[in-house]
Image (cartoon, rainbow, N blue to C red; front, side, top):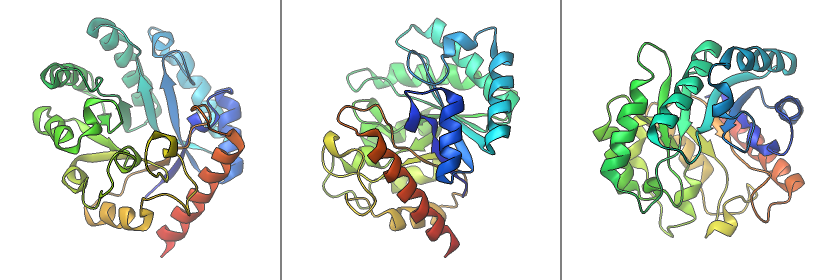
Length: 262
């Protein structure tokens, strides 16, 4: 499994700085934030101009020795027509860079599941003719916060995968053993951090929290997963001390590397 660092660990800084610091932490790969109005590239800015971003990302990744392995994207709060335009630009970016997976968020938890399945049916269609897999992320306060609902996505939309973020289940459920097992056959990417109980514990030190990281890795291997895992600690969440998040990311990288060598 390839271990990547999320550029969102340094969301307050330039992409070049984020990559340089991820490399200094010991990462050899990067999951790039393509988040409208946040970091590090705006999907709206890629429309008609993805070649510029391709050149910039390629240059920065070569300079820092990082392999780009995923895009973590959000087209913003827009209608489907605009989202399609922006996601197409993101898919083009991924395809040009040889990035195999693009993550998108599900609709808010109060939305209609049928509407979101229709949305993803349209968005997955954009990947036709490319080597890019589109995924929906398991995330709190979206329709995918409930594992039983998440299962409807891959079942209802051919070609759609999951970006599994177990931390968003750990914070909501006391007994999470086996909670995501049914999703594993369709997992195409992973976002990983240690987590505890409630949103205030969404990012914790490796030695704290309630996620059995080693057991989680075993479940991935047993399911045949051998793709990238992104260590995702974010510097700009409320209450987060950036230096602490950085150390937590480094410690999780060390644990994953040690587990991978066993």
